[in-house]
Length: 277
Ligand SMILES: NC(=O)c1ccc[n+]([C@@H]2O[C@H](COP(=O)([O-])OP(=O)(O)OC[C@H]3O[C@@H](n4cnc5c(N)ncnc54)[C@H](OP(=O)(O)O)[C@@H]3O)[C@@H](O)[C@H]2O)c1
Image (cartoon, rainbow, N blue to C red; front, top):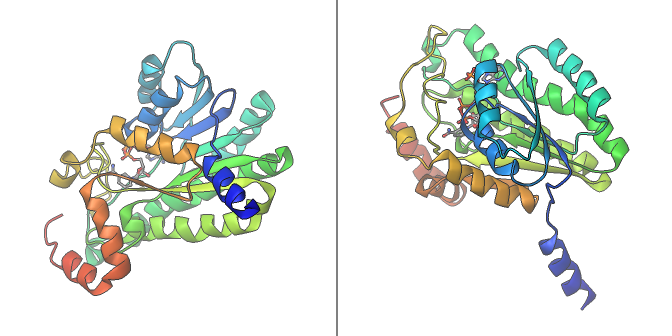
């Protein structure tokens, strides 16, 4: 009986966003912006960061007017700026209850065409930037006795995919790092959620790096057929509320995940057939 009660109670545990200080990176567009809009109706205090100041200001105009929101320009490839920003934010807000990270860039180039500097740039933003920010915030969460970290991986953080070698690697790396962090700090109430989006209609492919390190500039057809950012944000809020360890975001393309798990040979055959970017 006690065991049943424990299972039921832990299923009902819900993150309450009200009166929480929530930092969202990548908030100038796409899923980060859509999540900020959703949470702005929840009486949370939002700290929104991105490298794109005009996009951030546009996000602010979209929030529920009752929401307390602050914005800061922060480049996730600059670890010194990230650490300085955390020191400033903690001195202003004392505690960050939740850190939800969306900032990232993608890739559209094959392995042999991609210079190492592009691989490093993608790792710098998608992995080192994300862990720098999390590591800077974590001690204050541990001291406060509670904290929620969410990072954005991808379905290609679960399997390799053509034209995404460094991008896929950066997302795989997030799983290793943040699952380890959860194993170390879960017992002191640090919650970790890893978001696994499939296809969401955002500008991620337009700003992806091509082989020359320039913006790819095109919307992928698959991306264009993805779910809307509003739908993605609702799925994300649902998962964050339940503090799910993995939050899948998307539509039918998420079927690739069980295929990878139960029929890996089939998945490897399918991805090998993808010839176009
Ligand atoms: N959309 C999808 O289908 C999909 C699928 C799987 C995973 N994801 C992941 O989801 C996350 C959010 O992407 P999204 O789809 O919402 O695309 P998005 O609209 O392009 O959002 C990404 C945001 O990150 C910002 N950013 C990029 N580099 C940065 C840096 N160095 N410092 C600070 N901010 C930076 C971008 O700013 P700029 O506008 O200045 O570039 C942009 O505002 C990413 O991590 C992406 O990898 C997306």
